[in-house]
Length: 387
Image (tube, rainbow, N blue to C red):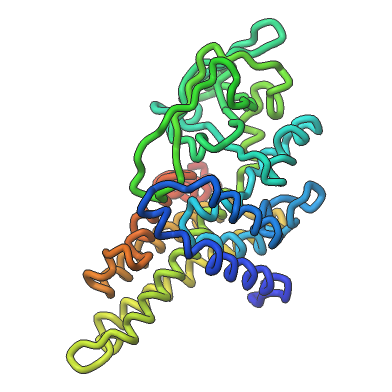
């Protein structure tokens, strides 16, 4: 593995970082204090991101994206991850790559408008009674003539209030397995405004202010067969094929925030004086900085290695779980230690540290909890031994 960046990668990193610092940082305080992201601000930043070639950069070139390899894409994600989540996710959108699984007609209707910034998507899997256990979902769809009728509830659905449509996973039957019957899952496109589909305000979240979640309700919501994404009963196959790298995306954005927090801690330790010297000279502070830098480097190497292997077709579930687990837990540690080094000022909202500290908490829960990641890793270790 070559640990050096190519000229193209350096240019992407520098361009993205400059955009984040010049176009996103100035609006962080407004979003954090109001908890709201104005539509006129979204459109303003969105237009600048499109002009800079940063919008939908996760997509292949043939559909209008940047065509980045996985490692380069994650370097780009790390830079975006430095900023308030609502600002970078909404204004510099990266449509879900599950949209690439659609038919040519579905790509025209859903994928391409998202890439052009005309629409936003959202992904609906989680339910009040089924989080990580997707096979336990109760939302269902039944065939009726040539249509399908959806019923049930989804919650914690990110930015569904803004989205023009949802990609909804529901149970469409059962299959017998050695461990008993399990739900068969199918994915559907559901346009906002479809009769029987209601989007309700979600929960107030301590993390990622301005980045909303919603509750989706389906009450005899009728859809044509053409709304199916992939094949009937093959929703898990669609998800597993196209959503594999989302854990690496979480890891990369966490690395950006961790690096920002560490930068503040280093600068403060070098400038702040107590008892006649910079506090960075005290072992209690200097050792914190050393541990923070070492753990961040370890998380980066795990993430970049997984990305490198992803492009070569050799990545394993454990590789991606290790990267996600390490990066999210390192972010929590670095955010906490950065505040400790700053003392009381670290908790004031004049600095981004209290936000980074709050935002870090959700990262160990969504896209698979830390416990789920440890389960995946240990399962892969034990499987060759019959465990």
